[in-house]
Image 1 (cartoon, helix red, strand yellow):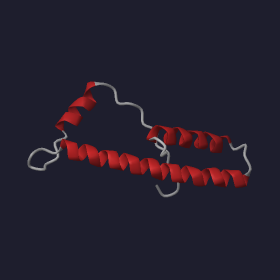
Image 2 (tube, rainbow, N blue to C red; image 1 turned 180 degrees about the vertical axis):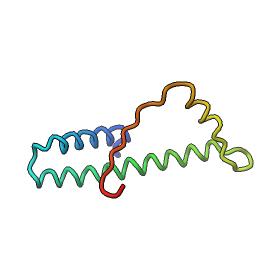
Image 3 (tube, rainbow, N blue to C red; image 1 turned 90 degrees about the horizontal axis):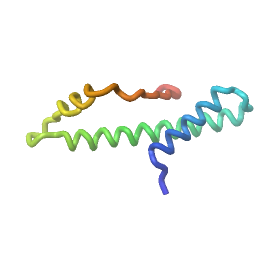
Image 4 (spheres, rainbow, N blue to C red; image 1 turned 30 degrees about the vertical axis):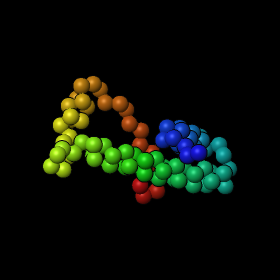
Amino acid sequence: MAKTFESSLAELEKIVEQLENGDIPLEESLKLFESGVKLSRECRERLTEAERRIEVLMKDGSGNLNLSELSHDASVGEPAPVKRIVFGDD
């Protein structure tokens, strides 16, 4: 069974925390880093796919993207904090 986006992100955050602590041997650090890169790519792919689906849903009858509803909703409350984890040339 495939992991959810949330479980992948939680696992990625745990890996980042372990790497930031620096208390692990080099070989284990490399394995964790490799796993982190893979999880980061998986999460990015899922977010990109979700964005595409939202764009399809937001298109009007003429095929034009109507983002006014999204812009309005975003201004109602404070935006949620966003964590960005960057690996390599991401």
